[in-house]
Amino acid sequence: MPPPETEQEVSHDPPWFQNGITFATVGDAAFMKDPATIVEYGVPIDPKVMIEPPDPATLELDPGHPGLGDTAYLQRREELFALCRRHRRENLGPPLVEYTPEETRIWRDVSSKLDALHRAHACSIYLTAKEALGISTKEIPQLRHLSARLEDETEMHLVPAEGPLAYRTFYSYIAERGFPVTQFIRHGSHPEFTPEPDMIHDCLGHVPSLMNRDYAEVLTLIGRAAFTTQDPLQVLALKRFSWYSIEFGLIEQGGQTKVFGAGILSSTGEIPFSLFSKDVKRRPFVTSDVIETDYDPSRMQDHLFVIPSFAWLRNEIEELVRRFGIPVV
Ligand SMILES: [Fe+2]
Image 1: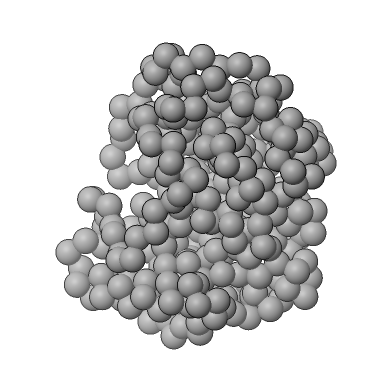
Image 2: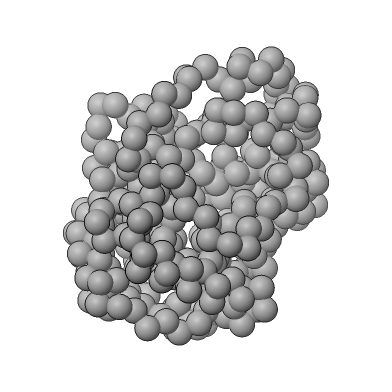
């Protein structure tokens, strides 16, 4: 995730204190005792949205989005929104998109800066996969071509996404070995910032690791579990597990801490911040803590978990899904 434009005041009280929910131990199938209330991003939400996610049919940009007020940008976003939504819903695969000089300029600027940071700080799973996939820093790749390459290698494929999809919708595709990827580029006024996951986040954060078969198996297991369970609290737990690993995980490698998560890997600000800032609390990845820890996606992530190894992470998610009694392991 990108740096926020404005900092928000977020309570550091654990969410269950704020709402009077009592948690059972993680070993129980239902790890929270009050399924009527769940807290996400610091506020209570209707548990139903975890199971019956919304599916907005029109482009919605948050207040403060740098593209608001730029008519040409909004028109382009609406055009890509309609195209990608149709391709997603009709199972047509990623459309071929002709990118503008401005979009290519932003891609070149950000992807070359990220490339240097990746060489220094990314974990080996990501680096090896990125090299194998050969994404150019010069031209924006066509998702259709990347998808065919992934299909050959790990039987994953890319699904065109018009924007961020609701978590359960997102994981319904992953359960079928499809990874939803946006095809729009962030606004050019802030090339290193985007308030929502864009193609740079998806293509340079998520897609390369899909070339790794073990990574693909972990991801699809989370997807199958999140799509199968009917318990909103289990969906929330899987979402947090995924956030603190797939999106914002750090990982131990050869005595060093490296970057594993796509949200960090796709941000020139977040990579050094995650590894070196004194403002970041880095804790060992303990699944029982992770699934009880809320987060705020709109700001720099100052609370991260360090995964001991990828094999360990795989074992943890398999164990969690088994403990939840979700019949997919
Ligand atoms: Fe992401």
